[in-house]
Image (cartoon, rainbow, N blue to C red; front, side, top):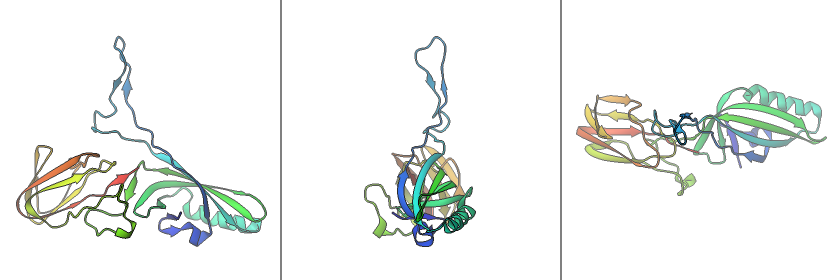
Amino acid sequence: MDVLIDGVNLKENFGLKLLAVHYGSPEQKEDIIDIPGRNGSLDLSEVITGFPVYKNVQHTLKFDFKDGTYEQWMETASHLKGKYHGRKLPVIIGNKDYYFLAKISIDTDKINQDYSEIEMILDAYPYRISNHTSMEPYLWDTFNFEQDVVYDLTNISVPADVTIIGAPMPTGCVIHCSQALTMIYNGIHYELPKGSSTSDDFIIFPGKENVLSFVGEGTVSIEYRWGIF
């Protein structure tokens, strides 16, 4: 399985062979109040957002590489640390359609005369983020029919109703209008000017059909970037 950091393939460029992966699960941010005289507790974790939010998650990657001498080991380790240690970068593990945004920590050990080990700890955003948006052509040769999504949300003639099935990551979207238009979403009317509009009100909720209704004349494009665990 390939691992790329900021577009660089670790096996091809550094000779790192992936040995093991610990794929962590993010811990939910909770706000639970224990009220005296009441059974149970009051869970306010989703009161503000309407959906769960998560802390960063840790993933661990272990590699080995052939060096032959302590000096070569130190040279490779120094190069890797200088390039990645302490930096926040996009990391691809396997599926090239998604990336982790993670701060990277590197440790290394000399295993024996010929081989050394590299351990990378990723302090990552809780979701893997799509490398594509709903306005970009999709690469069908890497498409996963069980979890990937495809949208054609460019230059839609208005009036129109657009349905987006929310991926696990709740996120906003950008609406690009050829003319001033009215959008109705979750029962609320938004007056959108010509050009691009970004707002936290345009949240695409996970696991549901999000219907955006557009009224007026012209065309609209919706820029939506999804994420999965």
